[in-house]
Amino acid sequence: MTSADELVGTLDRSGHRLTTPRRVVAGLVAARAGHFTAADLVGDARRARSGIGRATVFRTLELFSELGLVERVDLPNGEHAYVACEAVHHHHAICTSCGRSLDISDIGLSRVLDGIGNQLDFHVTSHRLEVFGVCAECQSRVTH
Amino acid sequence: MTSADELVGTLDRSGHRLTTPRRVVAGLVAARAGHFTAADLVGDARRARSGIGRATVFRTLELFSELGLVERVDLPNGEHAYVACEAVHHHHAICTSCGRSLDISDIGLSRVLDGIGNQLDFHVTSHRLEVFGVCAECQSRVTH
DNA sequence: GTAGATGCAAAACCTTTGCATTTTG
DNA sequence: CAAAATGCAAAGGTTTTGCATCTAC
Image 1 (cartoon, rainbow over the protein chains, first blue to last red):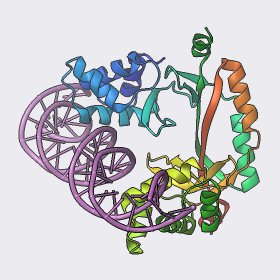
Image 2: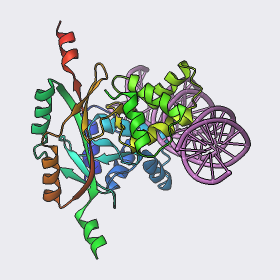
Image 3: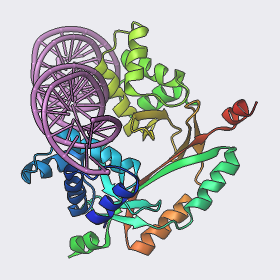
Image 4: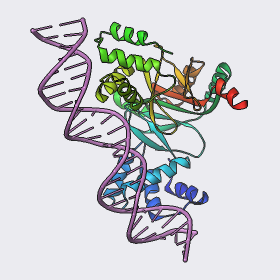
């Protein structure tokens, strides 16, 4: 979970203006567990009567994404969604039952990517790994 | 590269009707190197005066995707695209310079995924790995 | 004071659907 | 012939943009 303060802090440190709408969006992102869509946040913003417009939500999400505070993921159903990230690069395991996302530490993926690069003589610049499944909690919930 | 015949053959074997529009779309997919968007194919179809509508392109692409003949990938810029696949599950290394995609054989990824499952007590049901970089050809082209 | 942000509404896109018509097996 | 597939046009969504106004620095 990323706190709103962390988001705002990074915003500040990277030389962007600390505006009220951005603080609010940061709060909404931090308040969300699991993944959410841009439309979800627009709804949150309306419900909170924050007066923040659709465009600002999109623009802020884009900014957060550039700063690596949020990652855009694509669900198996094709929906666009976002998840809050820690600053370091990592991946998410997304529970298809409750929508929560777990951070995956890099257990050997970089070695796999190196292998790919060597085998194909391909210079890897970036990658995206999305893992979908059922988290421990949801597994036990179903089992009962 | 997947040939149109392979696509059509799989279509047939899986009990779907072999219609002219599907043959045409298969041809367009096969003719494409690298990744392409639905809009690209719609354009190809129009240019070829094939009389095939947008809806059919989307429906056919969806069908091909279900059959694993094509995979939907999401480019770093957020664009939705497709690439032709071999029948077996694998991943693509997409060249950001020429757009071509290379198949990645599973060199150790399944072990990584197992590790994720065990470590987090997460039951992995599906995943998506997208690797972006520069292919050998483009590397040498730039070097010259 | 000025560059950067915002809101609004409209525009631009992309994808899906309903339905009458055509085609395949 | 019946079931499946198609084309068209319209609907449904999502994301982006232009522009006047406002605000952080």
